Amino acid sequence: MQFWNMTKAKRRVAAFGAISIIALALSACGSTQPTAQNAQKVTQDIEHIHGLGYSADGQTLYLATHRGLLKYRGGSFGQPLGNDDLMGFSMTAKAMYASGHPGDNRFKNPLGLVKLDGQGNVTPLAFYGSGDFHHMAASYKTGTIYVYAEEDMNGLKKGLNYTQDGGKTWHSVLGKGIDGEIESLAIAPDKDGIVAVGTPKGLFMSTDYGNHFQQMIEHLNTTGLSFDLKNSNTLYIGGYDKTPIFEAYDRVRKQALSIPLPFSDVDSVLFISENPSVHGELTIGTYKTRVYQSANSGKQWNTLIDKGMIKK
Image (tube, rainbow, N blue to C red; front, side):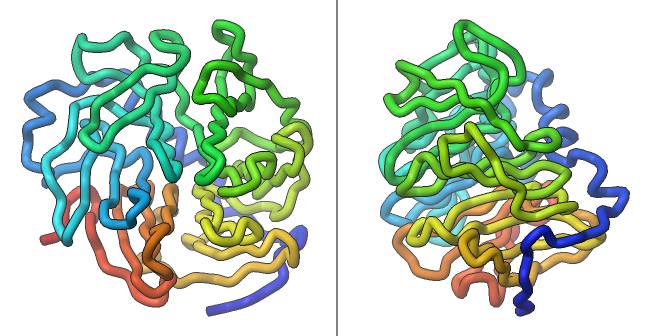
């Protein structure tokens, strides 16, 4: 592993970095409606992954996909739960949340902010039928939820907004200091006023609920973010700068520890989740629909899904 100082790090961005790969992935998901028939298909062809996270006991890994919620438990995947196109997938110690589009006519389109149970059942919470949040994150311990609204809607202002009561009341934030379109978002697990945002221009952090941001890393297409659940000073970062990058970043010391990745082609880490009960277990998901799991903080990786195909 390589260790270096990241303060205002000067990095040249490759042509790939100039393109929002998250936007490319999400643009393919907003219009096509999944069907009940698709939901019954054996899960060997996963079109897109829109998030991942562990249950509080660490026994189950959930994947939000274009065709419902997948469970990985005991070393194998089950059938899809539901058939909804789940976006903005976020988990806390007590609940999981998402946005997106319904797979059939059971729900209005778009879903707005919804709560999911472990069987993929959906409970609308806010902006039902009017909001579709591609970028959403929750504070693991406090339960505070942040969403990025692409336009004004029903009292929600364009930009970052947060709720501390499950979607009943909302607070808009200034978002000053962010440069570029938001590609990734993370909230500290125990301090819901600490917000990290990734854009094609780098990493930005706020300590006042997203009102004012400071740029921490320059010239890195920052595609994936997740705070360490036990230490809110540490942030896992996925990005791309001529090659894929995965790091553990110390926001106080402004230093990063490079974590080796199991791939080196044009791909990037979009989703990162840490097992809350098993020390050192990490799972990552990529733009090319790959999912890898490590039992030792990234020293070695096991392939769970390779370009949409589940590994047996």
